[in-house]
Image (cartoon, rainbow, N blue to C red; front, side, top):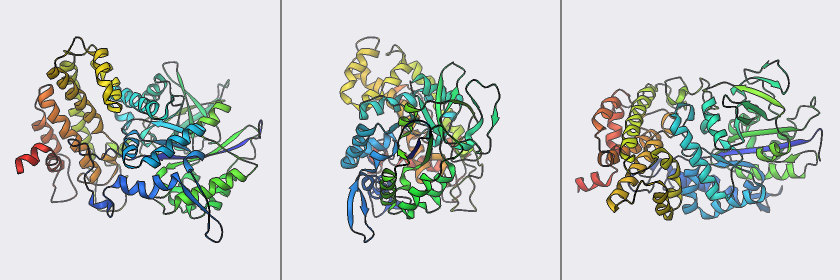
Length: 499
């Protein structure tokens, strides 16, 4: 099958877990809500990541026909913080993910710790993209063609960061497209309200003169997979995908559906098996061809230009307000709760970020030629502890004493925690004392502790004052200040003091 009228199908899974480790210990502590498993990473791995590495395909009698590495037949992105955990805790699934990409080049990179890039500082946005790219190269042994933007949250600055890093494409929701036009045309077509034709890639021309290709997935298909039970029947899923082409088009088309990868087994039990069956049916269908976004883009570059809605996302109808305001988006399980804590939490951590950045530049500049360039390269040390010596040889102004080396490392770890405290999950859910918001406050506490000795500066009193304005829905907490102080109890210093 080649030429005009080609019909390609792409199922994309966005696989992600936030960093859950105790920031002081580097290990995940037991999480009661994940029982009977030790923690949520372990639970989701058992229900999704591991089963998809060897998904069962059954016949009509329920007998096992074969097992299949689903990752090798779909497009996917895996978060670096998840892959770091999976490498140690689920080596077989980790190996299957890497093997799938070696077979088909189906993987996309992901911005490092799922920070909402339109709300990030310009420096943090650039570092998140560079760290995500370096992590991908380290694990997959090649440069990434595409990168998933956390929550598909986008603005022109984040696309500029992708383009500057050599990333060719990303994936957005249809409602994030504003208007389109064919190459060579001066007339724009309004496609607001999810009216963009999702069968083709589009090009975003950036103010810098660079450009990034964008795919828009089929929102109806994605909704049906994630929320409407389409994963109850793999054959039905395959039929829906194969029937979603537009018969009016004579040029090659792509039908794609992008969802959380956790739909395939964690959100929907046996979703891994439905996916395996659907992929098997599609491979046997002579009228369509399975591919990845990267594969389709390589064969069929964009012929159309698109303008996006800036500060938009796939999971908030108000743009990116879910991660900074009480916009009305929530999980729906607590109708009486409000999310008035989101804005003051964001404001408090923005203040902390800026104070840490100023202190870091001042203190690190004593030892490093380019403190921010060094931070960008620090991912090499996180991926390989043996890289520390060449890292210092490259970045240090002079030979550093052991004490000075330790201080530089603490400054860089402080900056790492300062980025981790903006992991998107901290604002996504309903309550500031929840697991995810508590975790970002733990990273804030770790950053404050490191700043105390490494800069040195004392930031905690002012941070606590600001956190008092972030109200909890639960009387026993009152506000985010109490949540922050509870996270301090996870530190070795607090544990030692209580003995």
